[in-house]
Image 1 (tube, rainbow, N blue to C red):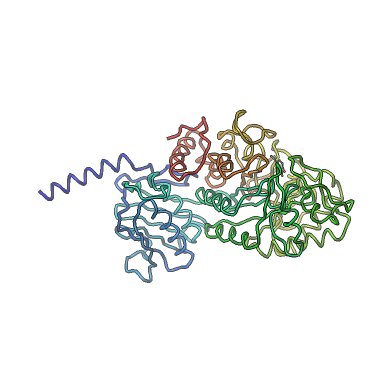
Image 2 (tube, rainbow, N blue to C red; image 1 turned 120 degrees about the vertical axis):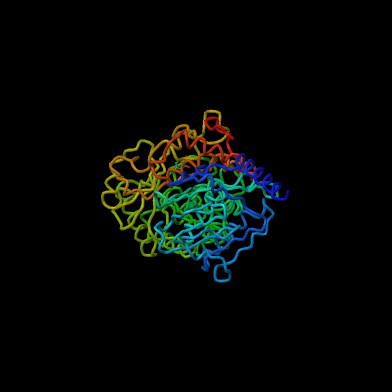
Length: 524
Ligand code: TNX
């Protein structure tokens, strides 16, 4: 009788599994290779353990996984490293621990620096990667394969089933980012951390912070304190503005680092500098402080390119920002400096590029930097809407690499549709399909795929005043850009993407994340 009862129980479990298990391919961004094994489904038991290779970075990823799974499951999910644990996870070819999740670092695995393999079998789950970063991406995939209820902040009763099989995955491009403009409207550290969470879900690895603009200066610089006390006290629409102390910025950087995300700070020069000029009129061409600016026009302000003091200022600012920033990049803007033209502009940019290089950092700038002389390693960020610019193509021929942020596909401040309550339309309307249907590898004429470092989705915030606004514009388009950065072109398919994206809706809803119920997505 006991045997019969157990058989009945098992078949009930099987039925439930069939009803609640996702397809192994239901992941955004699309994984490179998916081999489902319908006999391999696994259910996370209450007593599951997470076992991890004895390595501090891998251990941190295992803890991150446990923290993602504990709130909804209510399970303890203890984390132990293999040195302290007897389960046979060191054998990379063998099965995972019975009833557990193994995170295995394997230097010999053929998975690349960011790749991972996920094996789900009836006796457990094994994640394998060469680096902790690869494990982190595997964790994001694992999370998406659990029922949407896993996003609940409080315990729920669920059958925590995972679909059986193997995923082998790695990114197409090394640079996958999003930008948040904290200058037009200021956003608290907590909001930025939440944006970082959204990036991490979709395997983005760069957060570009647009820290300075006409309407506000947002990062503390000890040697020029009025930048924040005066320059930080304004924003679009006349609100109070704000700024990040060095401690605030360090918090953002460390939160990002823990999620394998590199912060790219932007100090926009020589234009977009009204807030700095209000604080330090000596930087202004006429040495007269302009009035604070809280409107949304562009292109009127600039620091004096003819005054040596300007370059002292820039060296001080970039020096302090570089010292706070562990990542390799310093973004120097360079866009819309309409009043600094020709040789004055290129001469200015060339000097600033040198300052960045002397600080040991790599220059990133908007593609307006293109006519300035090449400097080794420099990266241009394409925000054009036409797909052609001979000057940019020439800069690439000289060795510049390109980050793709085409205004008419990747600008998350563009409206979805004419009736979108916030956003702009100067680069056109961007519905989800428009955000998805382009190829970063071939988008700009004369720029070969090898010169493309990756993609970035910028969010300008002239019309954005709250975290809910940010999320509304980010979701569901950010995953589209993330997929273009991560997934191999062979997986590109609108109908398939649309269906996978639909499955994200219940996750966001469960997690309390705002999103646009875009009509082109068949929301689950
Ligand atoms: C252009 S894109 C800008 C920003 C604005 C944005 C609004 C770029 C490099 N400059 O200053 O915020 O358009 O969409």
